Image (cartoon, rainbow, N blue to C red; front, side, top):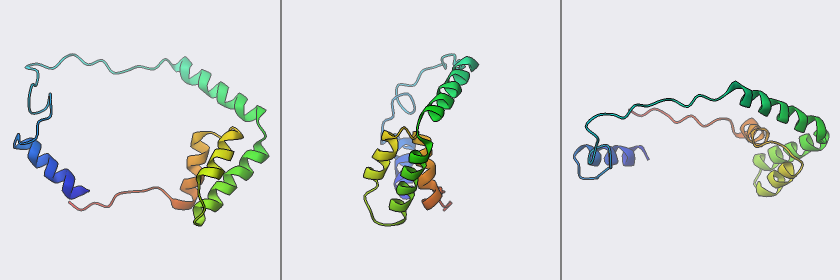
Amino acid sequence: MERSAYRIALEIDSKERTVVGLNRFALDEEEPYEPLRVDPQIEHDQRERLAALRAERDNAAVEAALEAVREAARGTDNLLYPMREALRLRATGGEVSHALRDVWGLYVPRETF
């Protein structure tokens, strides 16, 4: 994958590969950029919705479903069924991801340059 990325970068640099706005059809001057500023109230509201979700759902059933996800990840079982069940029980995407990270860890690419 790294070799392929390097080859593509060389093709872009030599203009053998066109990337609009980078090596062809670039603007003479940059347009002003204003970073997205998110209203803190949005984060507050989302935290409240998440707290309400966790208060309303059957947390014991969710934890059991997440353990089923971990168990499937440890073996060779199809992950889709336990993941679907966990999500049906209103586990969050983050909770399912954390369950997978508990088993597999976090991928960190090795440096080769």
